[in-house]
Image (cartoon, rainbow, N blue to C red):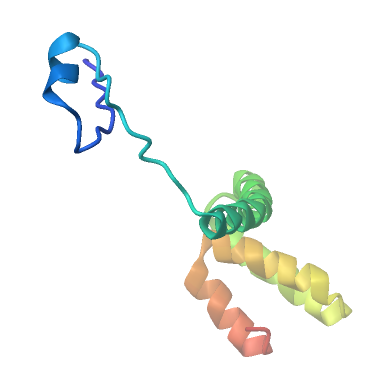
Length: 115
């Protein structure tokens, strides 16, 4: 399988530059200029992604333990945490259930008034 790379080029590249060395793009341009606001947004998204990655990893572990009934088990854990008065654990288990079965988690969160 061939891998091809094509660098971005400036539109105002002189003909003589292209004639000097046709195999190397001497008039390559920087095509990844990001503004500061976009960079800040990417940093915020990366921070949120690490939290999502943690929930996703825990959801995968939970799925490995409980197979196809993992979402129902997560919902049961959320209900038990809710009855025990542990809102943080309830939110955590709803997030894991949401990774495995979003409609089930959303219905449960609506039912208990947590979403």
